[in-house]
Image 1 (spheres, one colour):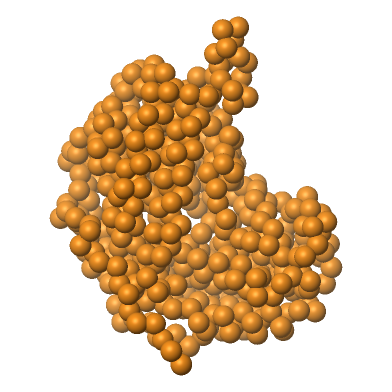
Image 2 (image 1 turned 90 degrees about the horizontal axis):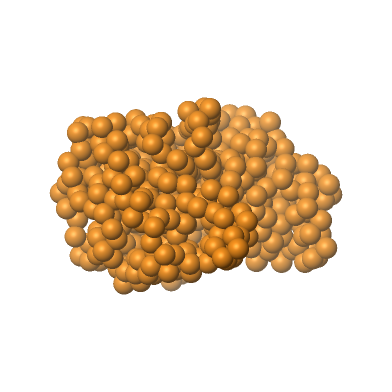
Length: 481
């Protein structure tokens, strides 16, 4: 049997500094909190020391954003668009550097950061740059007699993003905020701050006015200070449902606008007439992409009983071909788990699945000696009462359930507190539409999974949050309409 020779991407393109400060008012400054280290999850090697922002530092950042808001919001939309277009082009020019740094800090395969994350990051800035001078035609608010929009920017946006797609989530938040005329204070995740800090350099390179984008690094206390700051007009959060609840309580009773994109437990539903090989690829992409660190991951596979055995055989055969290892190797399919804490959670829930009676299976897989690793895993014989069918694992673990009729598939798919996404695999267009109409999920993919586009809105129902990001709907979240 042939095997792939290693094809590692060089780290030399990345200029890692020993320490990083906060980015406030266009300058890198020291933080007054205790600095923390960020590590490469594939090797546990320390990458850099990063400043931690105290509540005083957050206040400085918000004040800088407030001062810049007067200048930025007064610019004509076409002028704001020029900066956004410039940022988009710089992201493209520095895409290889950003992709390598993302894989080093996050653990995701370079093939994903290079071919998925970075093109989407640039696309979001290009897309919202195009909207900056067309807000009067976006359909929000009432147009005045002189043709101007009745909408206006909100002010300062406080944005808190997760560690699974650090740079992409930054783009989802910052691009529409700036296009609408807002200024931003963004807090990246504690375990993955480095690409956000490199983006700060890109903002300087693009000559973005000081204070329009500010980046404060730190742990949960830093994010809490940003959310609670009285001069923040809009809060945007992507992360766990547990933290989302805390933020919703903190914002309640204020006039801050809030969007939350939280957890998920998506159903990937395969009917007996689906193209099996195509469905298998969609299942693999749905749950093993980015090590399953995806809020909309298809972590529950619902298979029609009549094709269960055939599909499982094909799926196991396909999992045996996945390559786990060095995230910087261009042949790698499964990278490292982002942190020791997340690995412990994945292990705990997987052990609970086995203890509750589900049958666990993983392909033969040699795990590296150092770093945080978990093999691609699937569970069969799963009941809806099992924890692995109810709780978000946020790792490369798939729970397999069965159904007989479309109505049963809908009932099982909707039997979750979450409602972020779903997938339907069938040859019948009418069945796709019937299912999509009944699935309580913000995004329903048909004969594909995990497909994203900046023109398409994304968000959830129930405990998956509220509000939409992306597309025209993503503008409304940053406008006073």
